[in-house]
Length: 433
Image 1: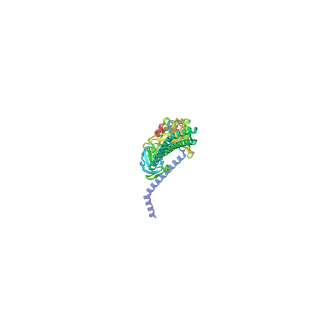
Image 2: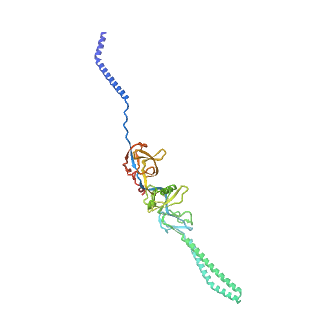
Image 3: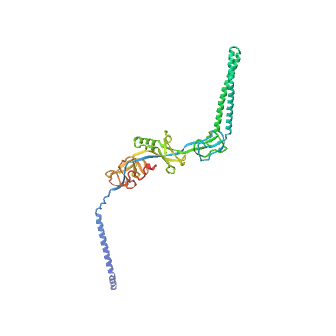
């Protein structure tokens, strides 16, 4: 027993200091934990601090100012030749020779084809011979008339005194009448012969086929040795005059009525001498280098499309424009002296898709305006109703505002800072030059 007690005492002597230090550390940790829980409990009982007061929403605005613009409209159209001549023979015959190069430029009066002239030359010679014969017979018939007239007169006088028989006088008178009728018949024969000779001469003149107009000739639809028929439905070739050249475009009749109403109401006015000037955009999007002239507007509306045709004339010295080519014509409508152009980023849409704008009033409060738009011009809208000169249109910061809210206004400092040119683009009149 005493041995066990000695062993226990020896163990306590060796490990007692370590147990005491561990106990002291655990007590300190318990005290720190209790203090932290007390601090957190006190903090949870206090009310939360209020958030800092928000500042005014900042918006970027552009001041709307009226400006002078030239309004244009872009219309689709097709190129058509200024003059078109379909070459058709006017007499029958074999084609002896072709005198032109396909695709070449020909002058008016140039020889294109030669039809065999021999049958028509023979007919002309025959008609001429018949005319000469009729003229000779007329001379003979007229030479016999004086003698027959004298004899008939003498026998009529002798018959009156019963110096000759009445039968002889009547025979002489009948012979004179017959001779006079023969002279008239010879004269009629001469006229017929002259007409036949002129017809033969005309047919002979049709054997060389010549160009009626100057222009570029296309491919030949007939070869040498083929038979040509008078007034055949298929032309031998086609000549087209390409300088100047026509551009035919279509415009909806409702657009024409709207334009007339604007001019009548004074919202547009004609631009003087340049009113009929037209620009042209080619198929690849490039601007044609020459300016054309509006020649006329058709007076008939196409019932199938509800549109009218406008014809323009353009110079085409290098023959860039070819018949059938699709183009877009920029036609000048008129001048708006008080146009309101606003950046497109300043116009949004409501739930119904109607255009609206947000403006800042003199008290720096936001209000919403319903707009009426005419058209887009570059990156701007032409506004006809809903805004007035001097309005401050919000172009940035729209997501921060609501009707009636107070805002901090910042003028736009980019290209649109110029009120007369919002959007920083060229004026519409310059765009269409």
